[in-house]
Length: 254
Image (cartoon, rainbow, N blue to C red; front, side, top):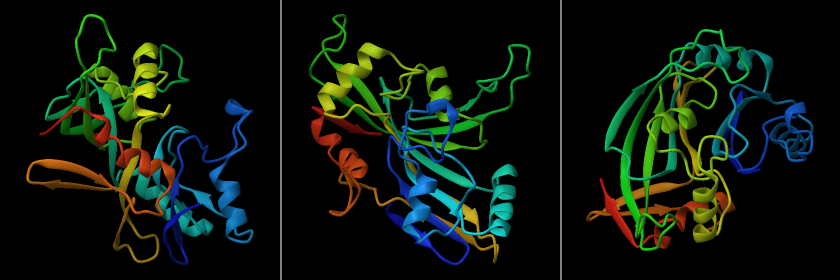
């Protein structure tokens, strides 16, 4: 498990796509769990997850190393004193900027349960195009690279808000379209959810100073050309992102 930051109170790691944060009866067949693997990696030290990432999402995941730190961090997440950035590859050409204020009902809530306020800001980074057709109605296939900043913390918020915009994340089996997801998986050589937890900014549980943690995936805009860069020793997830733009026939930076 790649460690991005560690001190006596917290540890931040790169969560691989396809891994669950901890064991759950909802996915009984899964065998890869961040909490158990990291505990073994740290010589049996207990770790406390303070937020979660979907199974298909890769990127920055923060855990506490003792109960008091876990309480402070959980309070920060509950009070929205946390700033998160995500990178998403979505269907079609998304707007250059848009804020979605669309309340969401929890997935497992009864139909009569009230929806909870949910707010996400999206910024388009690039419009992408492949000169091949996933749909016989169109000669080319379009996608967008989007930065997402959730301002609230509802479950599947980014995925559901992008569906609300009619730009679902590619590879999203729940909120996207199966045939299009399969087409992109074949074209890109990866069958996965294209959502990456890019950075996390949170008050440190001991000092209160802002702790900013970034994944090792960098975006560079040089002379109007966008590049995604991952270190040579980066996890395979990041190399998949790095090779993404090279598989496009057209990249227009927004």
